[in-house]
Every structure is written in C-alpha cells, then in structure tokens.
Image (cartoon, rainbow, N blue to C red; front, side, top):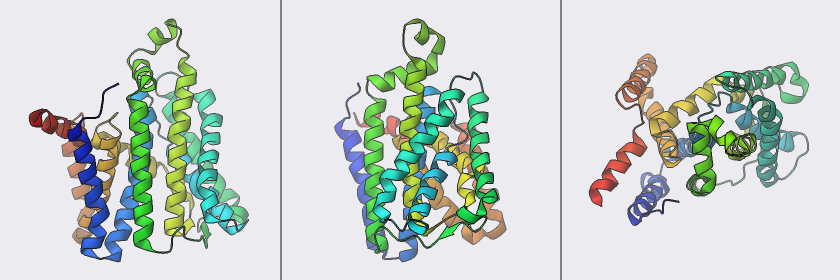
Length: 309
C-alpha cells in the first residue's frame, strides 16, 4: 500500500480549500449552483473509475445507477412523502441491488459484451420510465422534491464533503490489497483465476461499491434539481463521465474527480460562444486525449510531486 505523502495531502487540502472558499469569495448563486453540479459529477466520475478504471471492464451504463438513485429520491418524495434524508441511504441500496441484478450475469462475459450489456440495461430503464409514465411522470419526470438543505451554499458544502469522503474511501480501497487484486484482474484475469482468486466476486463487489456511490450522487443531484427525468439514464451521461475519467487519468480516483469539476466548469465558461461551444469543447477533449493518452490531471500531478521531492 502506497502511503499518502505530505505533498499529496497538502495538494488535496489546497484543492478542497479553493473549492470551499470560491462561492464565498465570489458571492454568486450562479457560481454556487455550477460548482454543486461540478462536485456531483466528481462523485460520478470517481465512482466509475474505481470499478472500471482498476479492473479494465468499461461500464457504458453507469447512468443506470445514477438514474436509479435519482428516481429513488423522486419516488420517496412524490409518492411516499418521506424525509429527503432517507433517500440517501435508500438510493445507495437500490443502486447496489441493480448492480447485483445486472452485474452478476454480465460480468462473466468476455470482451466488450459487459460494456454493451450495461449500455442496454440503462437504455431499457430509460424506456421503462417512458412506458410507465403514470408512475414516473414520463418525459417530464417527477417534480416537487424537497431540498436536503435550503441554503444553496450550505448544500454545496455538504455535497463537497460527500465528494471528499467518496474520494478518500475509494482511494484507500484502491491502494489496499483489494485494489491490488483489481489491478491484477485487469492485467491478466486468467492467471488470477488459475491462482485461486475468486475473480467474479471481486468484480461484482467492486461494481457494487461503484454503483453505491453513483446512486448517492444521483440522489444528491435529484435534491439539487428538485426533479428527476429519464435523460439521467441516457448514454450521454455515461459517456460524459467516462470522458472525464480518461482526462483525469484512469485508475487515479482523484484525477477523475478533479477532471469532472474542470470539464463541467469549461462547459459553463463556453456558453458565451453560442453554437461554437460544442465545437470548442470537442476539440479541447480531442487534443487532450490525443496528446495525453494517459490523462491530464493525475500524470501532471505525479510529475509535479516528483520534482518537489
């Protein structure tokens, strides 16, 4: 297990401090809202990176768990009128249940079939939300969710705290014996099986952990938007999260979270360019992925820490 150095710890404190003070120094509700969405994307990206980044089994249906957590919050608020705080643990539980139901048969598949199976599962859930519109609200979704915390600034700090805890837990797991086994599975799954390692168990367990945090992020997003809709299950959400992870540095956890924040901020900064925004954003991603195939955030930080040491 690689110990966390003082330089890594100082960098983490600096980044969290900047994120925590930014809405106070600027004093803008718009910035607070944008940063809240940025941090939620950070939770989604780091949760995807834990399973897929370490095992190499790309999950193209991460939106399945995000949407499951969001709709859990929506159903609790609109149908059962339950406390919004109850939605957080239940969203985690429902997302974990979905990961077992979908992951147990699909993680045994070889090649790209797991990714395609997860993609199909998220598409099916999105379609079911439209078919059973009497319960899900159809295309309009579910409205009237209660906020967890009424103050936008305080809610942002709460979500930021959730992201910090998420990154810490997933990083510790990735640096432990568990993470070593997941990386070994990525390197040579057949050899791991020959060595007596229960590969299926570790893959399903890592998918459950990944899904739990994704569902938590989905519930937080639902209580921020105060509504949920079928696009949360869309492939666009999954692909956006995957791009963020690759820009941050796959398998790094913290890199995925920081890249998610920066890329979400970039999309907001480019709004002034109108119809050219998508072109600029796409070109930026292409340049990063072409010239930096290992990612931007994590490799850059490693180079900086090596020089500082």
